[in-house]
Image (cartoon, rainbow, N blue to C red; front, side, top):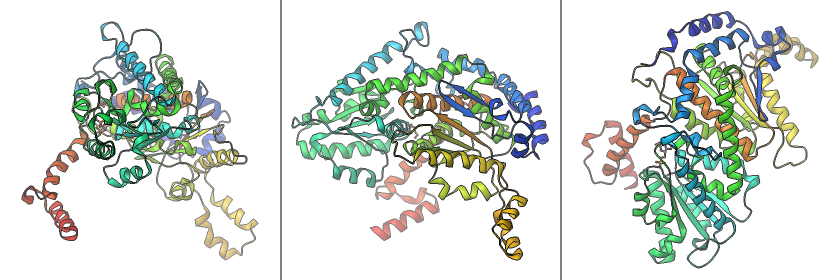
Amino acid sequence: MSRDITQTPAWSRLRDACDRLSTTHLRELFANDPERFPLFSRQTDGLLLDFSKQRLDQEVLQHLVSLAEAADVSGWRKRLFAGDKINVSEERAVLHPALRHLADTAFPSGELDVMPEVRKVRQQMAAIVEQLRSGNWKGYTGDTIRHVVNIGIGGSDLGPKMCTRALSAFAHPGLHVHYVSNLDGAHLAPLLETLDPRTTLFIIASKTFTTQETMINAASTRNWMLAHTGSEEALAKHFIAVSAHPERAAEFGIPPAQVLPMWDWVGGRYSLWSAVGLPLAISIGMSGFERLLAGAQAMDRHFCETPLIDNLPVLLALLGIWNTNFLGANTSAIVPYNESLRHLPGYLQQLEMESNGKTVNRDGQPLTCPANPIVWGEIGANGQHAFFQLLHQGGWLVPCDFIATALSDYPLPGHQAPLLANCFAQSAALAFGKTEAEARSELEAAGLPAAQREALLPHKVFAGNQPSTTLLLPRLDPYHLGLLLALYEHKVFVQGVIWGINSFDQWGVELGKQLASRVLPVLNGDADKTTLDASTRGLIDWTQTTHG
Ligand code: F6P
């Protein structure tokens, strides 16, 4: 039976500490302790986690660590890495750390060792990557492949897409990697118009090989290619698949040698490190991909070996628990100050919300506290000119993760320092705000008449006290990106453990799929609509009468 974490002494102590701190402003916390930065920051392997701008003190930090102990985070961590079937509702082990295990040893251990299979797939990937990057993979006319299009959605899209963009500075100059996920033809059709079938290769990535969006896009690419090649045999040169169901990929017509396997012990949103990362490996090379794995493996080691109070994923998780369950935040923003991390918020949305967006624990009992907040975000600088107004003066508690790199991989003179200055200034502005007295003296200094000053004053005050964490990397290279992503993966795992959730299933995505399969025949005119609700019937009627 899962333990109800809200009934532990650590939880009660945190409640008391929250009452005590509820009227303390971050300004005071900083004024009281000049050592706040060294006290509330940690680093590993060049990755800095600064949580000094979180609304906590040393006592709260100690209680949070006690909470992690009460939830047996260390025990669950052992179970994860031992290959126990911790995904209880699907009776599966959760072994994505095996995918970045680079040592020549077993993982997890003994009979369970999955490394022989993992290494075999890495070799298959390396061979494909080499052929494509060297220009030796030829299409049906003998032309070299120049464009690779990944067809997949969710975990079969977001990770490799985000990383391909993040590591664009490392991309092969002559090979262009594209991602198509949306069922809307507006995603695939315009891309196809720019492509030459003679030089294009498609990767159909789907763990299940049944996902509707992916199957429909895959069929369209097949038809497009067939219309040009004229023969089924020629198609083989233009399709690769990644799936835990190779037999379904074979039925689709992809030669078995070009179907890369994955396994039921890898969740979709944790599959970047598997053959799902193939388009990324094609873009940055197998050695670059292995550096990504090495960074993630370094974070695995840090997570396993570091005491909880210095453990970055554990700390990140605990800060989220503090903000959500004690300070009452129901949202959390991801703000990378790095254009190349443009797709990171979307990737983390799936990682966090699909893993821990649940209201029952792993035994099926209702949770006694809220779990994952709503995760959203946008790259910095742009976000400042869009939604930051609300963060500063909207009155909502919105904890933010600021993420930046010391160096840019696109070093245009005069860009990086102002970018970083904005990142650091925003977290300071959110934390410390501007008091009425400060605003008044600024208005006085501007020489405004008294009446105008007083009228403007309320608009110029910033409440501050908005908590944030800043994560800094030396640069955005494969190794540090791997480190960062594994940090968030383990953060999600630790939070799931504390809330008592199984973070590795996703039953909540099923209902919409079931209903879509009932609506589609009605929309196509093949089924009677009387079984549908009045709103859905109304929407169908409107669509049919308007567009036939
Ligand atoms: O519907 C959600 C989901 O099941 C995700 O968990 C998964 O990453 C995505 O669909 C894609 O699934 P597949 O790789 O099987 O096509």
